Length: 368
View 1: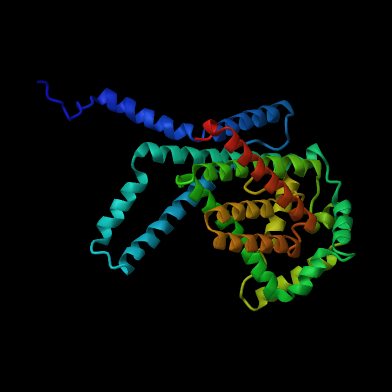
View 2: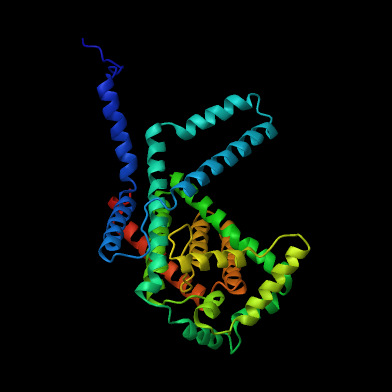
């Protein structure tokens, strides 16, 4: 009588290599729609930059060093946090547990390569957006500021929104806190990106966040930004000699000087606005360059983060929605945007989120 063999034959090196690449292919194909979107948009944008002979130089690597540095710093911060966490938890062998955790993160190596490939894809998304944003005044000269100023006043019962925010949150300290929250937006965005790059428990939510994220930069941050080309309150006077927002800018400068005098900090928004203005004059394609107010990408991404976090945890989601509200207020208070910029960005972001969610549920095989 034949006896069953309950063991597997060992694989030779060729079979192991083939299996390894097969697993890598599986990891990469999970994000095939993202890769396809990135590849198509990058080729189209690069081709258009050559065809139209743009005065602004297109670069694939605008954000490569910055994203690489951000990944390195994020990794060091996590390592520090986790090691001290093990010590606080009185782990018997914290070093061994720490190394074991690192092995779980980086191996299997094909999974790490797939995540690294997604990070490289994001550098292209940001580089493409910065280049396109710098082209907005060339494609459609700024022309909607006056309309948005009037619309803001209509929506807020004849009062400029910045007057309302500075009445509710008066003084340099309020502006300082709002500016801190506005700057914290980047770190929250980066943290959510890293989370969803490696998060696998809810693959459809992960796909919905990442696809909405990249589409928002293109649809909201370029298409509608070009269609509704505007500069925002902080640039109205230098670009059009319209001093409508001089009282707001003078208020912010006075508050900034107060903070400098007491050596507590500054309103970083003013320095950033000056930096972006310099890049605009020089027609530079650098990190964050380009001037555009409508719609607000700060508000858009803050709303996207809130939509995503709410699906993970409702209480944390309410906190994220509150943060999005703070970003909306800060964008007006610090002279970056008209209030309508954030309102419209919110509507567009929700529509893209819903649309992507519908496609994911309608065609599940395309989003494994």
